[in-house]
Length: 432
Image (cartoon, rainbow, N blue to C red; front, side, top):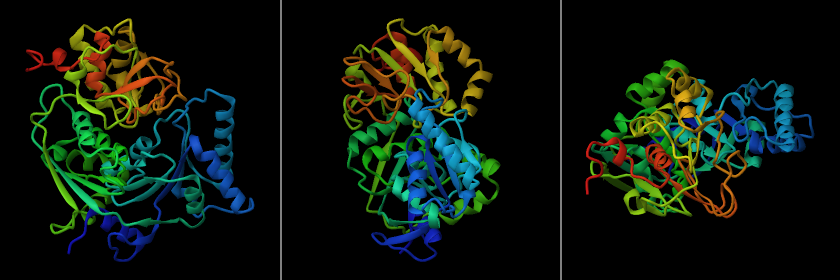
């Protein structure tokens, strides 16, 4: 019987044949930690090595400051200082400080992620790097500290579901809408510890930002990793940054024709409509038309799920077609995923136009994924966001959040109530 992508990735890292359900030790290509949790990882490492330990390879460890960048409290500043000092003492060069952006995105942009890599991180959405066919997973502080000793970690080899996506997105509908529908269909536990391979003509045409959107929210279905084999412009983008080796690396983990899948699901997006995750769970999914008109207090566009240039550009297209002003009754916050994305927005003249429209354009961070950021919601307020979770109180105790695509979020910001973007961007509006 053939091998799935995750089996081939883990065989490379384990240096032996693997089987689903088996537990194996794998070599780690990168072990990373963010400013949130990173300080505890360093303290744990020093504790278990009695302050005399050296990390196994300083060139395979990275720190990313993305949860609170720049810091907004003395406590966070002290934690960031602990990380900087540890990195200096250990000779760790890859410290992406407060002027970089969301860690996983920065690793991609820096050419540090290759197909087939095994990557650990202190972020539950590390698996968005599956967009480059890397097996990246979020783990606890102890796992990170232990990996710094020997450069290994153990994993259970997951079973794989295959999801084939075909058709063409209608006007006003995006990959985020498909992802939201998928979360609604499968539910919060629908991918329990599974790997997922995404394929089909929609995936083949998808850009990197769309692939990131898909893979990042595998977590919201309890999946282990979503994987997309790099091809076309995405493979070219990776090769330009990470080197030509990515082409052979991608080919080496191509799934076999007779690879074992526990289930194959097929979707056609040609009749898909804008979708929303309603309060207070990502899998509480409804079509936007069913909740249109609901008032909101704040709109946020950004996050590891929808903070790439293409995401912000899609929101900008809605703003331009609507008259270029957001509702004065809605606080509108836009956060690019990285400094590179921010510069691209600046070159295109978007930042100034967003500001003229009445929006706030922030430094690149994880932004309003939690209440730890500027813009936290007060009790009783309702927000709309392109983030990946909307559990009650996640961005403010007593608040509620709808999860939307960037297009739907901007249409909502413009109108002041939840709005189907097709009413703005599609000729003739919504087809009933």
